[in-house]
Amino acid sequence: MLKHEFGLSMAGWLQRAKQCGVITEAAHLSMVKRFSAKGWRKTEPGEPLPQEHPRLFDQLVYRALAEQYISEGKAAELLGIPMMRFHKERQLSHRMRLLISDANLLIDLEAGALMETLFQLPMQFGIPDLLYYEEIEPGSPGLEDLGLQIMEVSGAFVTYAQQLPGQHNHLLPAKNGPNPSHNDYLALALAKQEACTLLTGDTNLRIVANKGQVNVMGTIGLLCAMIESQLLTVDDAFKALDRMKTGKRRLPWPEAEKVLNALR
Image 1 (cartoon, rainbow, N blue to C red):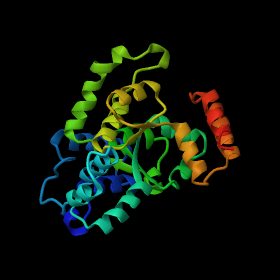
Image 2 (image 1 turned 45 degrees about the vertical axis):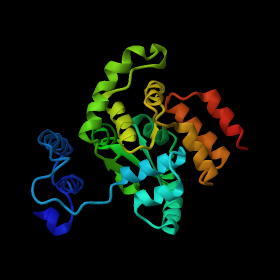
Image 3 (image 1 turned 30 degrees about the horizontal axis):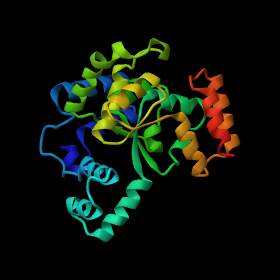
């Protein structure tokens, strides 16, 4: 099979075929759903490619260390690496931490003309594959080339996402706007799966994430990170906010202006 000859999965070949115009976007989405129905997104037919080192275990170790459940020595032991290497990888982990985004926040940044600046931050950004293919790619193609990671939500966490509406939707304040969609909940489930921060500007999704003990960062937090990383000036950030207002985005404007003014 091609995946063994070139080291690229079936899903990877499918994505490349769409990028090259060999298949249409509709055909690609149909095949993605077919792969899911047959379980091929989790286990493809044929001999598997060599296994990669599991990132989730590493993140859980670092999280246990951050919450002082284990010592640095125990963390290094669990990771199976010497202390010197552990310190180097811990520094890299802090510099290149993974954050999972929903569609809402990416649309905010696009309205603010900040998409390229986002991927200059010393962080990695991921998004659930179905959310990306259904909501983001049709209007904003090419984010993969900038560095956005298209990620799969595992079966157990898909089930988790499916259970969230019944557990939380009837409790969410109507004044906050519509309840989170299935794709929104997939983003939350992926953040929980990867033990990392969820990026969202959706107030109701933030409420559910907090109840699920998932850390959340919003558009204002990212603007601050861009300023702290010297990718934007405070004046640049205010101009981006103005563009978001013009684009009819929904942010807590007084709070945003107060936070940005504090950085002058």
